[in-house]
Structure formats: C-alpha cells, structure tokens
Image (cartoon, rainbow, N blue to C red; front, side):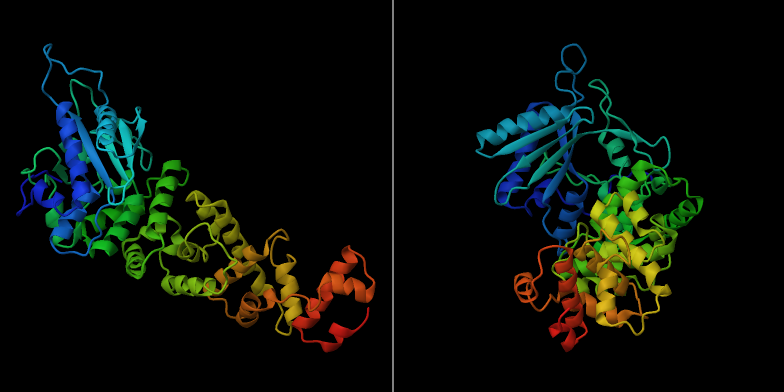
Length: 472
C-alpha cells in the first residue's frame, strides 16, 4: 500500500484529545511536554486514534482505556553531530521521566521497562485516568519465516526509525494512524488512508504478505469487521484465500499457536449483549473469509456454531457448579472437532479447558455404541459418575460440563436422560445420612457403608420404595 498522508478533513490533536476526560487529556499532553524536554517525539498510535476518530463522527464507541504511543529520538544532533546514547532506547527514557512527572502531579505510577524490546509501560491509578500507557520505540519488523515472531530492528541514536516505517509494520490501515502529543494543531497522520477505509466500511491489510506473516490477523479481521461493521476488500479476501490454500505456516510454529490463541480469546471474551451480537457476526465473517480453518479444517463449514454456543451457555446458567477457565462460547465452538483438546493445547488454553474438551470427546465416542434405551436413572447416574463414560478420575463438575457440551453439540439419541442427569439426577443425595444409616443398620465407616448409601441413592433415583426401606 502506497503511503499518502493526505486525507479528507482529518481532525487535529486538540480536537480529538478534547473528547477524553480532562485529566486523561492533561496526562497525554504532559507526556508530550516531557518528551519535548528530552528532545523526543511521541505519538498516540493504533486503536486509540481509530476509536477517537469514530467517536468524533458520532459512533457509539467507548472511550479508549489503554493508550499505545510510539517514541522516536529527535534527529537534531548535539555538538558532535550525533545523538547522545544515554537515553537509548528512547521509550525507556521517556517512561522514567514521565514517572517523575506523575509523582510531581500527585499521581501513582508504576513503570515496567523492557530494554531488549525498547518498550515500557506506565501503570497509573485514578478514577478516570487510563490504567496503562504503553510506550514503544519506533521500529521496523521483518518476518524471517511465515508465522514466526518477527525480527525487530530499533535503529540507533544516530539513525532512529521513522514513524512511517513504524506504521508500516501494523496489521490494518485503520491501525496505522498517529496523533502528535506535542503539537495541538497537528492533524492525524494517516499515510495509508485508514480513515477513508473506515468511512467506506472496509478493512484493508497493509501489504500482500500480511496474512502469511501473521495468520492471526484474519481472526482479528473478523473481530474488527463485527465491531466496526466493516468487510475485507476484494483484494484482501483474495489474499486470504490464496494464503490459506498455500498454508505456508505448517503445524509446528509456536508463535502461530500463541498468537492465534490470544486472538481467539479476545474474540470470545464474554461481555454485554452488544458484544454477543458482535461475536455472532464475527463467527459469520470467519466462515466467509476462511479464518476458522486456521484452527481446524472441520470448523470451515460449521452452520450450527451459533446455536451450539447459545445452548451451552443456556445449560451452564442452570449449572452453577460448573466453573470454566475459558469463555463458554469458545468451548462450545471447539467441541465438535475430532480432537478438540489438541486444538485447545495448540491455542494455549487452560489445562482445565483441555481436560473438559477431552472428556466431551470421550463421551461423544461412548454414546453412539450404547444400548441404553431402557436404562433407569440409577444406571445412567452410575455410568456417568463412576467412569464408564470416560476416565474414572473425572470430577462431577467436569463430567457435568462435558455432558452440557455434548448436549449443546446436538446429541439426540440419549438427549432426554442426559438432560435429566445434568439438571436433576446428579444432585439427588441418599435419603438418609451416613450417621442415621449406621445407627439404623449397624454399619461402620468403610466401603460397605458407602455401598449401602449408593444403593439407597439409586433406589431413590428409580423411585423404588422397597429399596429405600428394605434391609440388606
């Protein structure tokens, strides 16, 4: 994409910062003033600029909470014609100076610096101040192999990386805009026409190898498309089809799994009703653009996905003992796969999530071979609770979560008893306590007592009055 900083009626820094709470705007302007004192340049970049532009145009966007800033050394030289090296990388020097500024303003501020990456973060406290400002030294990136983490080049005090080169490395044109925090009259720097693309409701990748470099961008495109009501342009859809057909990443690229996992968790992050509507639209985009196949080819054509997600969440609302480590909708999305736990492992989802998905897989394998049409409630309960349907070590909540997943996935043959076990049978306790039973039948603590309590519970499940009162 050819850079062109011109654009239609782009607003100034003063106009956009006026949309923020007064203390937040003052904080960012303070950052700009500190940068000026250090002979540095600092720009607000990425999503915050995009969201402020949309908000200025009347979109119902939430105000930015976290702010990403690009920091570059001033090209003016000292007396020897070279920049001093004591403040390199400049993002770290700016973070330290800004922490002192915050202290003078009475603001609590924690600084975390990462010298090898040329980045730093400022964690602020306060009612309306942003929770974090991330500072990054302007950089170039180069992908040595598809899907791998990029090689980062920070430049040097003598030859710092230009802002334009820093923006080139980003994913979409709408995220490649910058706003000076040092000149209130400076307009938004939009070299790749990101604002024009947003106004056309179009997502534009920055170059033809973007998805080859980082396939997780296709998952992000689906999320952005749903959030902003945008679609990939024809050229970028062709890039997606071509790159997916080539599959240049292979299956053993660690960076691919970690980045895909991060994007998938963001996609499925639970939230308000509006965000649920966005998730539904994002899943439709993933189907249309082929992004679902990045996780597993079986997800490429999945017309029942949304119904499955809704059913699982509905069942979980009646099972408070089932506590998940990852979003419910994400588990329901993965459950029909041949090896859902393996996909969850590649995405670096929680170990508990992997166990739950594997238990659901075992259950789905067990049910089709089961001749249990005449089974009483006690037989179903024993099978599900004693390990016949999977590992005996499965806890009751784990099995309950697996049953809910299988039901959501469309199990029909044994749907009625599974539902009754999930919502009722498994909660039924023996009609009398162990203490009363020992007094009544002369039993002592041990396996025999446990067996008798189980018999009484099974009898209660089957509504066998004689079993409840009969003597052993």
